[in-house]
Length: 86
Image 1 (spheres, one colour):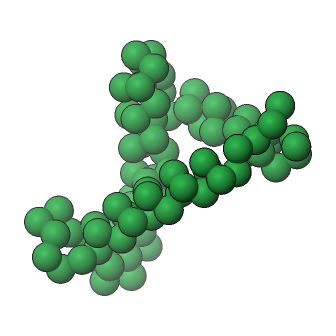
Image 2: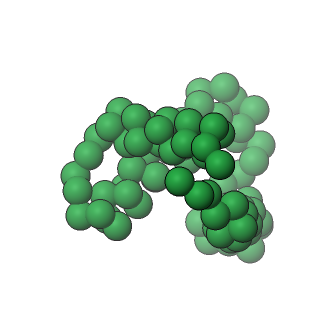
Image 3: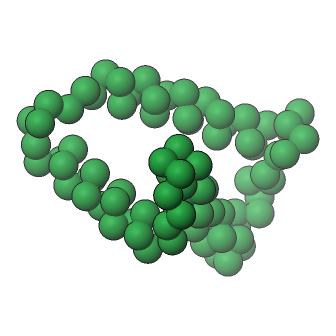
Protein backbone atom coordinates (compact mmCIF):
# COMPACT_ATOMS: atom_id res chain seq x y z
CA UNK A 1 0.00 0.00 0.00
CA UNK A 2 1.50 3.32 -1.06
CA UNK A 3 0.93 6.32 1.17
CA UNK A 4 0.39 9.69 -0.45
CA UNK A 5 2.30 11.85 2.04
CA UNK A 6 1.98 14.99 -0.07
CA UNK A 7 -1.83 14.77 0.06
CA UNK A 8 -1.68 14.12 3.80
CA UNK A 9 0.58 17.13 4.24
CA UNK A 10 -1.79 19.28 2.18
CA UNK A 11 -4.80 18.19 4.27
CA UNK A 12 -2.83 18.72 7.48
CA UNK A 13 -1.88 22.27 6.52
CA UNK A 14 -5.47 23.13 5.59
CA UNK A 15 -6.81 21.70 8.84
CA UNK A 16 -4.15 23.53 10.87
CA UNK A 17 -5.02 26.79 9.11
CA UNK A 18 -8.66 26.40 10.09
CA UNK A 19 -7.75 25.44 13.66
CA UNK A 20 -5.55 28.52 13.96
CA UNK A 21 -8.57 30.65 13.16
CA UNK A 22 -10.36 29.23 16.21
CA UNK A 23 -7.92 31.13 18.42
CA UNK A 24 -8.09 34.47 16.60
CA UNK A 25 -9.84 37.29 18.44
CA UNK A 26 -11.90 38.28 15.40
CA UNK A 27 -13.48 34.81 15.13
CA UNK A 28 -17.03 34.66 16.53
CA UNK A 29 -16.37 30.99 17.40
CA UNK A 30 -13.12 31.89 19.15
CA UNK A 31 -11.64 29.62 21.78
CA UNK A 32 -9.69 31.58 24.35
CA UNK A 33 -6.28 29.96 24.61
CA UNK A 34 -6.02 31.17 28.22
CA UNK A 35 -8.78 28.66 29.01
CA UNK A 36 -6.28 25.90 28.29
CA UNK A 37 -4.46 26.75 31.51
CA UNK A 38 -7.20 24.88 33.35
CA UNK A 39 -6.40 21.19 32.99
CA UNK A 40 -10.06 20.15 32.69
CA UNK A 41 -10.68 22.70 29.92
CA UNK A 42 -7.55 21.52 28.12
CA UNK A 43 -8.68 17.88 28.45
CA UNK A 44 -12.13 18.81 27.14
CA UNK A 45 -10.59 20.66 24.19
CA UNK A 46 -8.26 17.83 23.22
CA UNK A 47 -11.02 15.23 23.61
CA UNK A 48 -13.25 17.29 21.32
CA UNK A 49 -10.38 17.84 18.84
CA UNK A 50 -8.96 14.33 18.80
CA UNK A 51 -12.05 12.20 19.37
CA UNK A 52 -15.45 13.85 19.12
CA UNK A 53 -15.03 16.07 16.05
CA UNK A 54 -13.22 13.43 13.93
CA UNK A 55 -15.91 10.88 14.80
CA UNK A 56 -18.62 13.26 13.61
CA UNK A 57 -16.73 14.02 10.38
CA UNK A 58 -16.14 10.30 9.73
CA UNK A 59 -19.82 9.50 10.36
CA UNK A 60 -20.99 12.26 8.03
CA UNK A 61 -18.59 11.32 5.24
CA UNK A 62 -19.24 7.57 5.41
CA UNK A 63 -22.90 7.66 6.48
CA UNK A 64 -21.97 5.19 9.25
CA UNK A 65 -22.93 5.91 12.83
CA UNK A 66 -20.02 4.92 15.05
CA UNK A 67 -18.88 5.82 18.54
CA UNK A 68 -15.68 7.49 19.56
CA UNK A 69 -14.05 4.20 20.60
CA UNK A 70 -14.84 2.71 17.19
CA UNK A 71 -13.35 5.75 15.49
CA UNK A 72 -10.32 5.56 17.77
CA UNK A 73 -9.74 2.01 16.52
CA UNK A 74 -9.90 3.26 12.91
CA UNK A 75 -7.53 6.15 13.72
CA UNK A 76 -5.06 3.81 15.43
CA UNK A 77 -5.09 1.53 12.40
CA UNK A 78 -4.36 4.53 10.15
CA UNK A 79 -1.48 5.58 12.42
CA UNK A 80 -0.04 2.09 12.24
CA UNK A 81 -0.41 1.90 8.44
CA UNK A 82 1.21 5.31 7.96
CA UNK A 83 4.03 4.64 10.40
CA UNK A 84 5.10 1.24 9.13
CA UNK A 85 4.00 0.84 5.52
CA UNK A 86 5.75 2.32 2.53
